[in-house]
Image (cartoon, rainbow, N blue to C red):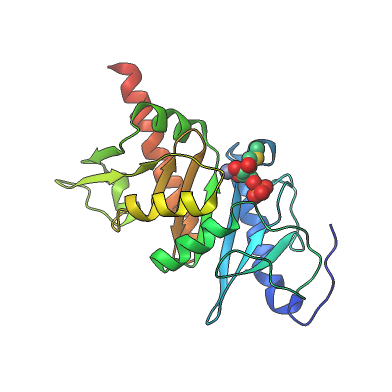
Length: 211
Ligand SMILES: CSC[C@@H](O)[C@@H](O)C(=O)COP(=O)(O)O
Ligand SMILES: [Zn+2]
């Protein structure tokens, strides 16, 4: 896929490379199989602008040019290049940013997220785990609930569900039958949150198998 070299391109090139690197990392873990998943980073707050992965590509093979600038509603910003169609879920990324103030959003399709969403459709609780510190919660004596929301192909519906279920203390939501959304102040924090939440989901399933 080719970019254009518009005035905006040099400014977003660094973000694009960072997104491609993150996507390759998640893909290598098997969390973005079969073109699934998408990533975004906030490049401007006023007006809100995000750079989001293009739709339908193998997320393990992206380059800096496979990223699309979108507005605060997730619509491609006109005149910013021909780097393809924004992710089908760009509007949800923008909604997460508006709701949480996040600087980066990660969406992965992990088996654990789908399995947990099926088993605990009302949300899943964690407690007394050192790993909870990685999402800013206490390692002891605090119950942390990760919300689970129903899936939809309509990003407005999905956004409304996410807003209604959002736990302000937890930077993530499981989308039942679909995958996981996580976010952070920047790409690095969003990655850490993704890894921690995925670890928690896998633990829950391992424990369930042992019960
Ligand atoms: C197997 S891809 C499923 C898609 O519908 C979607 O859920 C997804 O995560 C990737 O969509 P994309 O438009 O490439 O960002
Ligand atoms: Zn998806």
